[in-house]
Image 1 (spheres, rainbow, N blue to C red):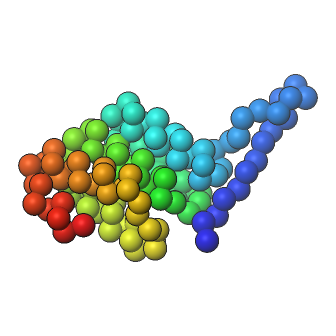
Image 2 (image 1 turned 120 degrees about the horizontal axis):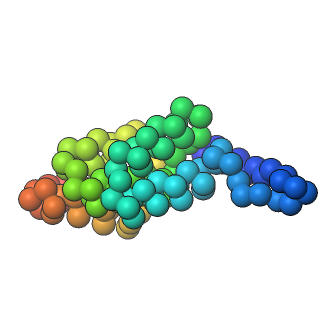
Amino acid sequence: MAKQRRSSRKCCGEECSPTLDDVFTYSALIGACSRGSDFDAAMRHFREMEAMKIQADVTSFSALLSACEKSQRPVSEATEIFQSMKFQQVSPNHVTYSSLISCCEKSSEADLAWSY
């Protein structure tokens, strides 16, 4: 089961946005990096999340794969991320496969997509 913690802080008596200590917030951050085609930042935040012992879920893995695809990284990096996902027993969804297949296409390895 994924470790999911919600936390909030009080700022001037008001509730502030969550800190970076839950999978939802990290997934949103990784997704933002993906939309900006910044794979290095997405991977940095993903590793930071893992270092904090926060279990990645399908959303965080899919966002990382999307960042890989949008940054036009080698398909080998996407495959490594996908293998890590399977190793951690996180089930892929249609977003995961879409990003992975797009990575294959952009790397001119469309035939590899059939292996997933």
